[in-house]
Amino acid sequence: MKQPVVVENRPGANGSIGAAAVATAAPDGYTLLLTDRGALGVNPSLYRKLAYDPVKDFEYVGIVTTAPYVLVSDPRLQAMTLRELIDLAKKTPGKINYASFGIASMAHLNLEALKARAGIDVVHVPYKGAGPAVQGVVAGEAGLTIASPAAVLGFVREGRLRALAIGAKQRSALLPDVPTLAEAGTDEDVLASTYFAFALPAGTPRAIVERLHAEMKSAVSAPEVAERLNRAGLEPTGGTPQELAETVRRDIPRFRKIIQDVGIQPE
Image (cartoon, rainbow, N blue to C red; front, side, top):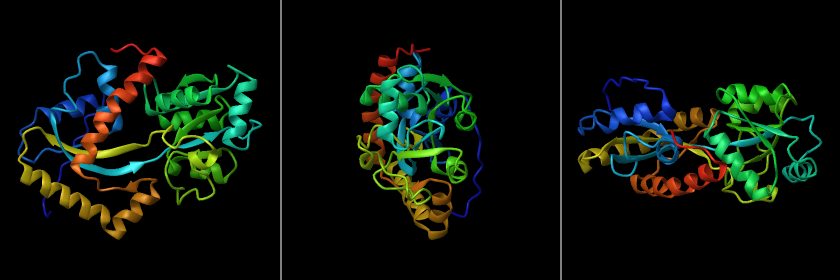
């Protein structure tokens, strides 16, 4: 676009601080939000007084990339496949731990969904981030976790982690030998991918939304950009504003049910 772009990180509260800042910004197209699935689909069930409404306070530009999760386990567990892991967990209820990125993180909610679907009892151990959770499984402190393919590729190649399945419709180019969830014998939507998406303040003129969507789609379609994203375990998407809006509307009740079932109390 031949314009300088300033990146202003606003971390905190599972993305809520950054999202709230954009929701109250001028709707002129000069302030964009780059956010993930948790800030839009999960936070409405985590906070009693969320400073923004994901459905009403944004004009969506679209999903830039999708990031599927791969389920990995401690190779010292006597389970070579997802089915064998489920069978082992059923034989030893409460004996296997799983590591998450923290309370109500995508790892926590996804693995609770897997627990419910598989009918197993594995114990949640929250860590302070995705990196520490992976390291916890490598060290044998926990039996399994989920992570991006890029984050575990080295450990899998070295035999320090075992990749059991990936939560995507297709296998990952980074881990081509790892089956999808459907191939491993369970529903493909059990492990919801995260995504990274652009949004604008509500009231931004439609022409601006459409221009930014076109620029986003053009960027992720460029071969050199797509290659870099794929190496990072991010699948170029370039989705439409309507697709993102529909995803957010579906996500809110989906994750609310998991949060209520787990017993997480809104802050």
